[in-house]
Amino acid sequence: MSNATALYVDPGIQASKYCNVGAFAVLIFDYFITLEAESQWVLRRKWTFVRFIFTISRYLPFFGIGMTFTAAIRTQYYPGESCIKFGQASNALHIICILVAEGLLITRIYASWTSKRLLAFLLVFPVVCFVGSYIISDTTVLFSSAIYRDASQPYITDPGSCLFLTGRNNLYEYISLLIYELVLLCLMSFIRFRRYKNTIGPLQRTFFNDSMKYMICIMIVSLLSIFMNIFPPMTLVTITDSPQIVIHSVVASRILFNLHASEEHSRNHTTVEVSEIQFGEPTVAVDV
Image (tube, rainbow, N blue to C red):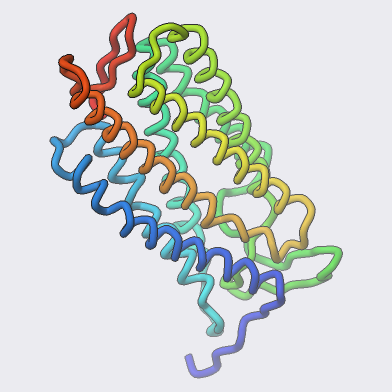
C-alpha cells in the first residue's frame, strides 16, 4: 500500500469534482434549512406509504451523493485496488434516488385522478423507459473501466476504475428521463385544465403548480446532462451526476412541505375538514 500513485487529473475532471462536491454541500444546506418544516409537517404524522417514500427520497441521496463525494476527493490509487463495486453501488443508489423521487410524483398524479389504468401506466412507463435505455446503451449500468478515447484527450487510463470518470452511455438514461417527465407534464396539464378546470382551490393550485415546476426543473437538468454527455470532453461527463439527484430530492421534499402548509392554511380558513388532498368533483383523498 506504500506504492500509491497519483490519479490523473485535468481541468475537466477537477471541474466535475468541484461540481459534485458543491452539490453535496447544497443538499446538506437545504436539509438544515428545511428541517423545521420536516419536523412540523412530516415527523409528527403517522407513518403512511407516502411518508415512507418521502423518507427514502429525503435521506437516501446523502448516501448516494456521499459515495460520489468520496470518489471525488480521491487522489491516489494503490496497485491491485479496484473501485468497480464501489462505482456500481454508487450508480445504483443514484438510480434508486431518482426512482423514489419519481414515486412521490406518481402518488401526487394518482391523487388527482384515481384511475387504476392511470396508475398502471405511471408504474409501467418508467420501467419501459429505463429498460429501453439500458438495452440501447448495450452496456451495464455502472462506472465504466478500461481506457477512454476522446478527441481532445486521446488516451486516459483509468486504473481500477478509480478515476472520477465515466462513459457517455448514460446519455440514453437521461433521454428516457426527459421523455418520461415530458409525458407526465402533458398528463398533468390535461388533468389541470380539463378535469379540474372549474374546481381549483388553494390546495389544488399548490399541488399542480409545484408538480409542474418539479417536472420542468428535472427536464432542464436532464437536458443539461444530455448536452454534457454529447458535446464536452469525456472528463466533463460526470459534472451533473450529483446535481441531478439533488434537484430530485430537494424539489420533491419542498413540494410535500408546501402541500402540508397549504393544507393547514385551508383548514384554518374554512369550516370544511381538510385532512387530506381533496380535488373537487370527484373528491379524491390521499394521505400525504
